[in-house]
Image (cartoon, rainbow, N blue to C red):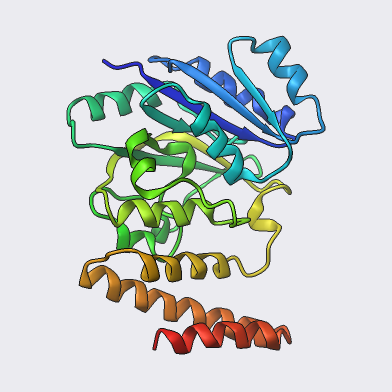
Length: 274
């Protein structure tokens, strides 16, 4: 069974949570070949924690450039063919990599593999809504409404990034949604229908709490896909349909908040794709 996996953990001022994530990687029944922590400008004791408690971890510090730049730096630093990502506030279950390796080992055509997840909000396990249900196969249309793959759950072959590009560093949020659209319109996705990660939420530093109107980033991603990707007719029609739905909701929200210039900007996009 292959062990050529690099784990990439981006982090920013999460020293208090980072040990949980790192320990979950070190406790894997099939450990990875290397662990890379990209510190995106932390001012807490992240560096001291890594160097003192986790000397086996490759540590890279950079100025604060955002999570996309941190993940992209990790991809560039990684030495191996398969790349696994773990957000520094999440944790893997012990057999996460073992089950994914077994899945990809049985199918040479698999380039992307993800799994179900356990959600924990403010310390309490919660059940995701039906719209958050994970799937496998050709899931581009399933990925259009919202983010349908968790970064912490995915295992990706390096060649995929050579084809579709890396995380978009111009996006302050929804950068994962953007990448999944670019990937799933060109690749099928393998799905393991059991939870292999714990995804934690509810803390104040989550990007979803920092930006009003998160759908504007998803709108940008769909526009980019429509402008620059060769899509099947069905995928293109689905992208148009979701784009119009998101534009309508976003424009109404902007007008309600007296953001008339913002509304006009997105009305122009609306007219372009009529």
